[in-house]
Length: 429
Ligand SMILES: Cc1cc2nc3c(=O)[nH]c(=O)nc-3n(C[C@H](O)[C@H](O)[C@H](O)COP(=O)(O)OP(=O)(O)OC[C@H]3O[C@@H](n4cnc5c(N)ncnc54)[C@H](O)[C@@H]3O)c2cc1C
Image (cartoon, rainbow, N blue to C red):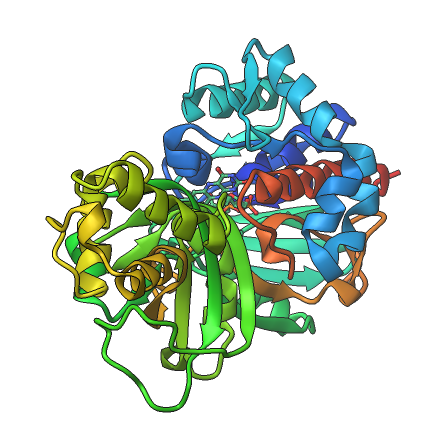
């Protein structure tokens, strides 16, 4: 049985839920098709199931965070700014809070509350949500679009594709949209994982799994040609720094994760030879190298009988302190006064500039977003309509648009979804 719609939205993630609700609110008869039983799977797992829905900034702050791609977002953010998004969620009864990092979460710390807010709005809009109904084919038959799903054939005047990228494929995001769009003549910028944990060749890192450090300065550096032992704490590369970030780091069985690591992972992913890179970590980024040296010297003069490792563990978790002593080839039970000036210098280097050899990233399986996707030059940023196939609209992560950790990616998905929904409905008349 064929059915006829004004607008069909494919993929009920952040962008699709918003696009479908807005198109319906603007008067269109809307069908939202979702592959999974549950809409918004990534919303539920986002931000450690707390959902960092946006960032406490203005539209300029969001645009800047997206770098060269940011200007594409002008119209979308004019349609739905970070403040508008917060108001929208709060209007559904979900209070929000801003953390010191600027990240905005539901005050309940429950991502499910954000999803419920979006589903509530969708329900009131009159759009119909069809779950467990994957789209298998998308064909242009002007002035109509035909979609073949697992259950039926659907006709529509306008289609909004919001199938996301290829990261976390277990969530349903297996890159289906790229295939359809390529066959319609779109250019797909090669999709690559971004915001992914980084794998390393250093057993001491893996042995610290579970340790989290709130503030680490992380740099991705090119290592010198001759590899040195991973046990060496001395600076090994004066190589180029290709990415840097300061933030929280988590030690894991495969290597490193946490916001600072995810944010620099793009540089590793896009590098021709990731194994030639290292992560240079500064475990006391709030202090200069000189200040750390002076602190050690003071400890040896004023608290000489105390173990330096115990003193240091007031600033850095003890398990990491022990690992840094081992890297510096110093016994952790050494008393502060027993350390020579040279040994203190080696320890300062371990604290401020430990280099960890990189092997790669965890790839699409664990990447929070996909970099690459539908080329922005082929999409009208004022409407999100394809310049290649009229009547086709695109929003969210399927676009060649990806931002850093901090709620930027959801903001882009919600704003482009909102604009696509409004524009697809407006273009019906
Ligand atoms: C673990 C994790 C944590 C994250 N945390 C945050 C965070 O806190 N803050 C933030 O800003 N960003 C976060 N992100 C990124 C954010 O989730 C994405 O950028 C955002 O979800 C993109 O929205 P989207 O609607 O474009 O795509 P998605 O949310 O990926 O939705 C795409 C939808 O399309 C459906 N679909 C795919 N193919 C088909 C098909 N053939 N037929 C029908 N349906 C289909 C999928 O099942 C899915 O529901 C996180 C991502 C991950 C993986």
